[in-house]
Length: 125
Image (cartoon, rainbow, N blue to C red; front, side, top):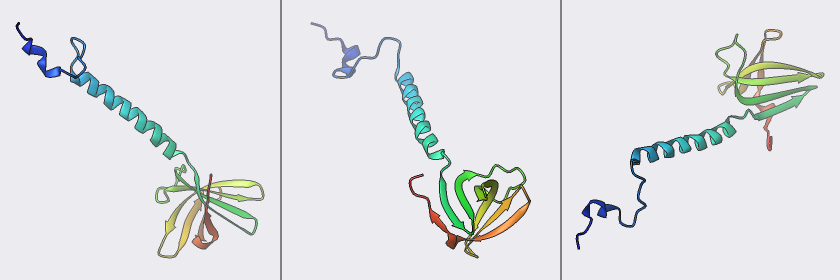
């Protein structure tokens, strides 16, 4: 009896359909991996409040999303300032050398230096 030596290498392995090679399977694996990574990354990108501080009728919330104000390029993160029901959007950057947050608000073009000590971490947001 003559043995089929051409197909001996895949004994015990599933046989690929005729015409398919390993490359399409790798492409599908990469695409599926990218889709899974995109799902996990998009969950991480969600803009959650990181820290908030309150005092004298003002509530300040610091977010982990980029600042959306076009006028600012050196303050990379978003913050909101809520006072008497009015919410102002702004940008901030931490300043470790002075233990404060530098904030800019486009609505009135004001700059604020806010001490880090008033903030606490937001849990469960």
